[in-house]
Image (cartoon, rainbow, N blue to C red; front, side, top):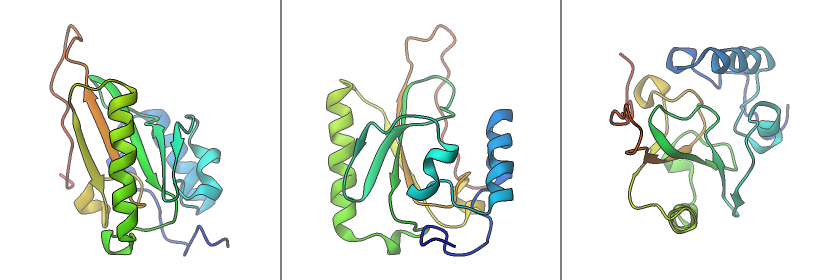
Length: 154
């Protein structure tokens, strides 16, 4: 077992999946018993390019963006962690620098960000590995509906 997979628990929560192809990938992740967001495993499951990489984070497009998003990026912590208390304080600074870079690079007029952490029953995350979402709504979409970020099961 590599350092990127601390134990054999489930690293994904099927109840929070939204897409059929996402569920298929998650089934493979469960069978493999590997965290899909740890760097050793990321390329195996995540087919999007890495846009930017820092000491603590990588920035990549979300493989399954929310409906009515113009831009949906994930900032994934490079070291496996599930709780905010496991993140070095300097990683928080780098996260904001990375997202500020994305705001400027993509000329984002506004949007939202959220960080999923901890028990997926509470976070509604599909992956139990610290990651942040950077979301810009597609206001110009003809059938636009506000993007909703779910927290908690139900």
